[in-house]
Amino acid sequence: MLIETNTTNVPDARGYYGDFGGRYVPETLIPALDELIAAYNEAMADAAFQNRLAHLHATYTGRPTPISYAARLSEQLGGAQIYLKREDLAHTGAHKINNALGQALLAQRMGKQRIVAETGAGQHGVASATASALLGLECIVYMGSVDMARQQPNVFRMKLLGAEVRPVESGSKTLKDAINEAIRDWVTNVRTTFYLLGSALGPHPYPMMVRDFQSVIGTEARRQIIAMAGKLPDACIACVGGGSNAIGMFHAFRNDASVELIGVEAGGCGINSHQHASRFADPSVGRMGVLHGARSFVMQTPDGQIADTHSISAGLDYASVGPEHAYLRQTERAFYTSATDEEALSALQSLAQTEGIIPALESAHAVAEAIKRAPTMPKDAVLLVNLSGRGDKDLDTVMKALKL
Image (cartoon, rainbow, N blue to C red; front, side, top):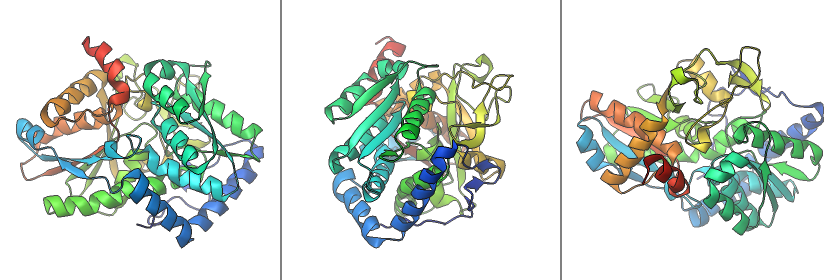
């Protein structure tokens, strides 16, 4: 399946999604970004590149991933029918491989032999290490030491795959700080190094590239849900940290006015606690700003410093959000809400015990929103949830939180 680009009117030529996006980077990186834009456009116009990526997805990633009907959970809730897009069944256990393979192939095409990446939950790091091993590329992954402690299985997987995992001890020692270090590395080694960014954020063209590589999720899901349910979904639900799995799902439904698009941020300990990572729900900290090369909604202190964030899920524990999500919210095409740590843990248990599926804590936030909404909807309504990853990586965190 070939990737279709330019299916919306965003971004514009400067990389803006309305008021959001752009390229807020050191001058030394502008030539590298220009080179990347040119290489990406050439690759997308090259049938050989697209066919190679499609072949790898079919024979290596395991695409198309299926949709599962959550029959027992739907019956228990007594409302809308819940369907799950099973990105947890993709190779490496999450949607991250879709983008990592695409960018790694692009790096190889550009003659870059060294990959740098950042990771929070570890899934993008694992995907980057996997793609690098497959293509024979050197891979350096930056990861906050706090995230390394709570995602030990993924740290070990990255090392087994041949990647060097560099702990980050600055700041909050989480995803924001890992991105800082990856960008510093890229600036220092820009001639030989490709920055394989994991989410739909950063300077143009990264939000666009990541969206396009992840759009395979929505393209498959749209076709599959019509075949299974006999109609389009009434709503698509996905968790939103940086926002790659959500934008990948939403993209195929953008022009379907009947389909509500719902992004779920990390509510942490509750919005009023100020211990969360919800950029949209808390106006006291979430407002327009610039972080990691793009203008978007950013959690900030009163004096404009980046505010601390909290989420039980390392992949949602980030102070900003992809610029296209900010644009979708501004234009009222998508609605954004939040789920607390407690709600995510409860949703994880519900899905495990009714469907035999243990989701990643990130994905459990989306499941939590489906559990809230389904009982308020008629029984012939359809909710399509993007199950972005599996929960193996989170078992230690979940066991401690539930005191198992």
